[in-house]
Length: 346
Ligand SMILES: Cc1cc2nc3c(=O)[nH]c(=O)nc-3n(C[C@H](O)[C@H](O)[C@H](O)COP(=O)(O)OP(=O)(O)OC[C@H]3O[C@@H](n4cnc5c(N)ncnc54)[C@H](O)[C@@H]3O)c2cc1C
Image (tube, rainbow, N blue to C red; front, side):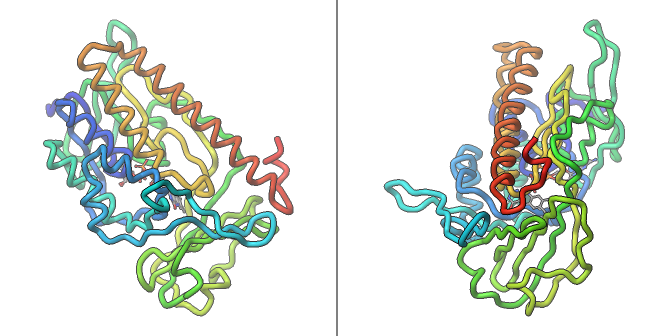
């Protein structure tokens, strides 16, 4: 049976960041990803805070050389007149976000993991968790995959918001909002007002996000804060003259957190552990940070500088604090709407 120090499920930002940080510390790492790349993912507007993280991961140059569009802030029409909200600046100039093509962005991160010696199996799908009874009780010791069983001292689930490992282990899910579904799609053509910066516009039912993701290609996301149908031919007004491109997608963005973010033999990174709706605007940043934090903690664990229990507890508290902070900020944001949903006041 294949063995490694760390087995990571999922090659998105959380999985690749964890793989890179673990490999940088000399751990043997295997990563399985169910899709052949390039594959589609939403989440293309990246907060400027990702840039220093990319530097630490050693991929800043590779990402910068991809030529993604950059922007200095967002247009916001929320509780009053539309206005530009800059990210900020320092003595080097304004902070710039990325409009990243996720297929390309994720590929560059995964390439860095491979360059550092991570064994990547792709396409390879996690099918069933392997749990064994040890002296300390039940422990995750590996995963049965589409390429056969694999064992590892630690398994990281970074497989996204379907919560693969949490479902396998029957872990409790803490929901902090009613069911929220984000619909999103793409449109081709020209929309001059959206070429410089993305926009978020609230109305009586929810909000709409629009951004230019590549020259001539625009992405929209629509979130309604109470259950409602969205017309099958919906396009935001500013994109109405453009040609819809590809599928229209839907994603469950109910605010939620897995109760046990870490336990004997396992850790949950990125969306596998916590999900918020995209108005929180930094899902990828959080995915990268949680993967990097895990790499750091596992380095300490394998060097015997920290016990597994202390690593699991510290990680769980760190993610939970961040999640609770974001929940409060999102609630305040929704309370400021002209017609706030009742649930946001709770
Ligand atoms: C509509 C929408 C818009 C968004 N917009 C933004 C945005 O503008 N900016 C932002 O920062 N965030 C945004 N987000 C959030 C962002 O997409 C996520 O937070 C981010 O992708 C999480 O990264 P991750 O690595 O945890 O998971 P993912 O990116 O979901 O990666 C998980 C990987 O695991 C693989 N996988 C899944 N199951 C298995 C399995 N069983 N075996 C092996 N591999 C598996 C998948 O193929 C995938 O490659 C948005 C989300 C939505 C739904």
